[in-house]
Image 1 (spheres, helix red, strand yellow):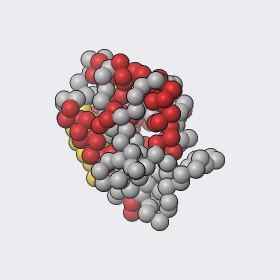
Image 2 (cartoon, one colour):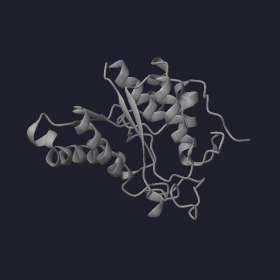
Image 3 (cartoon, one colour):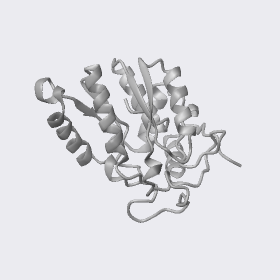
Image 4 (spheres, helix red, strand yellow):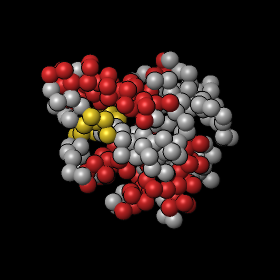
Length: 218
């Protein structure tokens, strides 16, 4: 399981546990602007009693190129056309490759990621075409794929709206108050309520008719 600490990934984790999977959870400290989402991932993993939780340190801030990894680029508060500046170049490919390596070590059959292609920011590495291509590559490039049964990429949220995701998580008893989705949350984990991620999250709770437990900055 890939767990960012945000709303989508915690829902995907809850869905996997309900389905009976033993969940080994992977998070990344990749030089992101805010560490609060990562702190949330640690709390979520502990609360949900996962089999193991690893946090891998990467230095994507060395490359920059994104408002999330480069302090000289402001996080936009208005909707943008096309792929927004919060897109981190090749982030999911880097994350999925490391998840693939751990999956081989664990002899795991599945990798689950909470990507969504309906209510999302338009990132190219959240689309079904990307996931299908990565799965093909994974089974060409690994011992598990060449000599074993291969590895399947699970995307339980890919076709759901944000409100549908929240409704499902609410049914499963997910504590969304632990999750952090904001691109620029403060040190106390309070969301900005202005960034793209905050807008999508707030609308999802409203559309689902579920009380929003997000803590916002004044």
